[in-house]
Length: 194
Image (tube, rainbow, N blue to C red; front, side, top):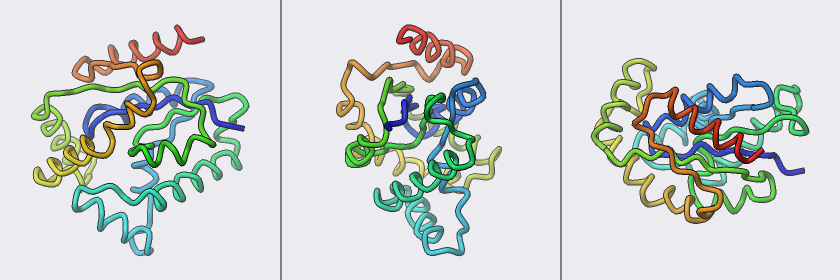
């Protein structure tokens, strides 16, 4: 059985986590943020060390590690009945981050819609990320050079995912709007589909 899935997609700082968390509070939606999976890792373990190594350089964690961790987390949530795939829609942010990941996940998820939180103003994203670094104590958002590398990595490796899913599944949403307006746009698009 494939998981009915909505993807929240966008550059670092575009608001994916904010929107995913809000959607996850609505009955029949279950939110899973790949970044939270990584940040929950024990950094004393080999996988935790690997995550630190890649993220501190602004690079993506290799697909095999990412997907293994993600599958384990989803399996745990299904096993604990926090996520009920027969009833709930899965809301993902931060995964898939590459076309390879999207291809590897196609047997597991049925993507209903990709919400692309578009924010072409990179200066605004950098400002958001620096504020988040202070507010949430996120070391990966504190260094401007690392932020710029993360944005370049996003452009090179993640943006092609939008082409992979195609215009029939991708809905562009202006991420510079207020979070409430972004949420409204997402909910209206989900409602149109139902």
